[in-house]
Length: 510
Image 1 (cartoon, rainbow, N blue to C red):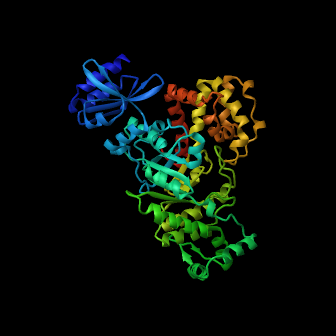
Image 2: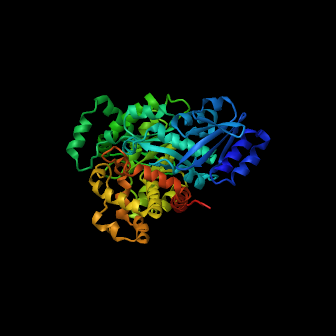
Image 3: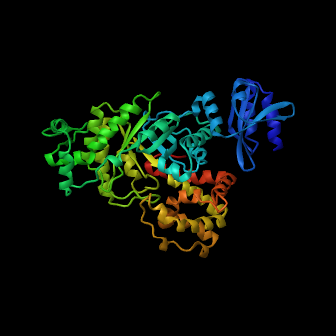
């Protein structure tokens, strides 16, 4: 670390005119993240990797220097602070460096959610997307994911803040409180500065089919008469012409079905918007998720929900319908490609009519339908990925520390039944060869197979939270250590894998 000490001495004596020269000098020192070099007033800041941790180094006795928590030290005659990348320090960085604060992204055509279940993937994502027209949502977690990983909304955002600072990413990023179902969860995310809320309406959707006539009639008849009259006046006996020229109309049976399925969800979304989203300072992107159902969303259902929300003054920025086929975790789309194309086109026309983006959930690794999504949407969409970044982290472990992976894999198999309470997959453990029978070279190819991918994909919470009898983590600390020690390999895997997503969607990633 001798070169770092010399650099600190130079930084402590540098003036504003010396900043660019110092940043160039930092590129020659492996321990320093050169893009993290920033100057504010008479303080100079940068991130450094030391042993198994990253730290913030700051020189110059400024208000920023005083506020940051850290240990004061000296390099020659220069005093500096070595500060942890803590949540508290991330808030101070956000105070002084506006580009580290998340922003709404609805004005951008193409956005991609890059939910990182661990935290260290965002610099790799940024390196891929920097200077491209796609805008990333770097902090993206649901309450379920937070509970399973033992993280918090603030912790997830803090990791994104440090990544943005490290990579000097000043083009804007989002923070999504994903699949939130309760007012309390939304309030928590908004209080931490999240700029996108994905409202999961599943608990207010009656997952019914046309053949469920008894339940449909029961739900419909339970509505107040005034509400029924208003809905019948709004949707019956009318023909709705979309901006694309297509027309939609509702029969009495169509209306009763969609009222029974969605009306409670519509009323819930209007309430959430009026109470929490509209008053939010600075504006918040609002996504409506109606995709957590067993059957695909009919275009009439999509229109029924959207028309009422827009009429009620709800600012819908994106909508996630349930597409036909299966969007299982961590593997390609399963279903009829021609049917998907037809349905996606119909949903896209409705989204264009009302002026919002379609959102594709469980979008990781759906390579066979990516060209359709990119083409039919004219590159106007929001794609959500999450677990695929975790799988690329696991790929690093397999390559760098195969014996660690073998232990993780064996443990995951013992916890698969528990994990399947939260996720639907079709993986067959019997189709995965025993890892002890595989050579290291064979082990590397394991995550190219659907069954193994899905097993590791959904057991992340069990793996990360596992402890021994003494309360020590079984794998968590070793996972983070391995990823930091092999950081460039991790970023290369992310570049290749997420880059493939973008290429199949129609974007140039070079």
